[in-house]
Length: 283
Image 1 (spheres, rainbow, N blue to C red):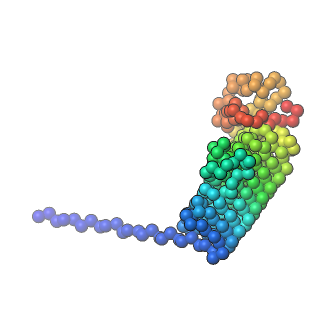
Image 2: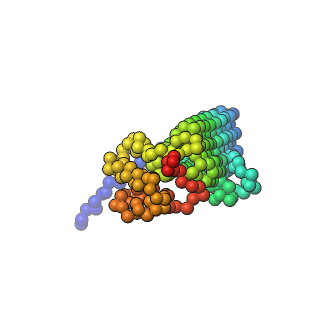
Image 3: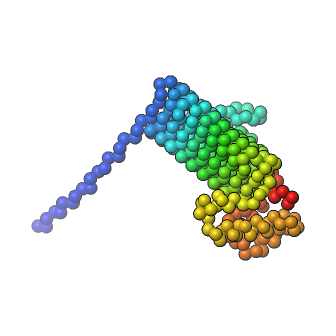
């Protein structure tokens, strides 16, 4: 008779139990709120009954989160931030609306973020790994990308779109319906009333296009050839010869138009928009 081989059973590894949320006795967490594992709700915070707080989120103290608001894992929210209260839009009639905040964000003191409106898609969204310094404001129906930095006092009005890796300097204001492309830089105290191309740099009040955000691209380790292609495209698009529409036709025939980063700028300019394009002063 053949012997029956004994097979060794693998050791079962038990997962560590998820840490329970820590809720300060002075905090108010309404019934129905969902609080993730390891989250901390600090002193004098108020969390509404329709709020979802992700794992490891920290509300340090005196934070108010209202409405249908979701906060992604490990995001930190500092005192006196107000997230999810009804939008500051006189057309809002109490319809169900949403604020979505991504993971690993930092939301400093006094920041305000409003949910969407029925007329604007009903959702305000913020991506991952964003930083909002003190007293910044994200208005209703905005779409904010990931890895974005709003410096102190940045005010972004309703229905704006802000791409990934955008940096907006202190005290800058952005008009309703504006688009700011990926990797753009907006200088402090700028008044942005028109769309800013991807990789562009806008300065002044009212803001004018002032070249490319080369410093930002170098920090993110863009190659020299990539930056040179973008510079060449910028010179072609914003020269003083002909109209912008004519220059767009010309650049489409250039080899540089095959570069994916240049293509992003071309597609951004050609996309429909509620606002005009931010141009160099005198151009």
